[in-house]
Every structure is written in structure tokens, then in C-alpha cells.
Image 1 (cartoon, protein in one colour):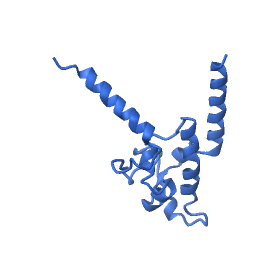
Image 2: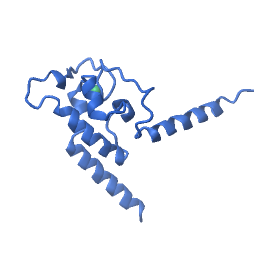
Image 3: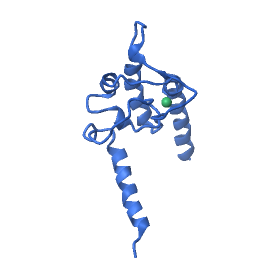
Image 4: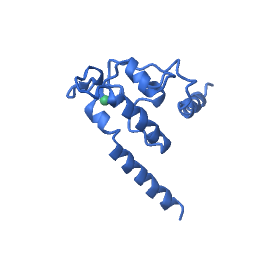
Length: 136
Ligand SMILES: [Zn+2]
């Protein structure tokens, strides 16, 4: 008799391990994003156009890449990553900014906005409140 749930358990454990290791640059080979889609949610939203920072005519062209590269690890630190794709998929070994840049990554404005500094502060605050609740 095949215990299917055992297999699932092992798979689950593997996935968990991959997530734990996602911060390291070692596991990058098998993480491949579809860069045609939003780099942050990996989906197509019929009602929302993608923003292409690379094609931006603004002076600070590409600044979205560096701000994401800076802020996403901070979200990861508190375990509140606001994006749907695994963070490891945004770092192919050269860092998030370089990876996004080299793929000319695009995203939905709403997805990008969910990675704002304001959201980070709010998440940190929430996390802090949660942890102080538990300590009682
Ligand atoms: Zn998106």
C-alpha cells in the first residue's frame, strides 16, 4: 500500500529547506522566472499594465531595481515578503538588482507599491507588536 501522504511530507520538507536556503546564492540554477510577466507576482493581471523601469525615460531609470534590491531582503528578514514569487528567483547569484536589470524586469505598479518603505515599516511594527504579545 502506498502512503501518499508520506511522499507529500518529504516533498513538503524539501520545499521548506529550499525556502530556508533561498537566501544563499547557491541555489539559483533551478529558479527561473518568466520575465515576460510581473517579476513580483509572476502573474498576468488583465486589468493592470506592466511598468517597465528599464524603458523609463526618467532620469532615475532603473532606480526601481535598486530600491527593490535594498528593501526585499529587509522584508525577508522579518518573514513578511510582500511578493508572490520566491526571493531566490530574483537573485541569480549576482544580487537582486543585477538580476532584475539583466532581465529588464517589469512589474505591476501595485506589486511594486506593496514593497514600499512605508509597507516595510508597517510590517516591522506589526511584527514587533506580535512578538511582544507572545512574550507575556
Ligand atoms: Zn504583479
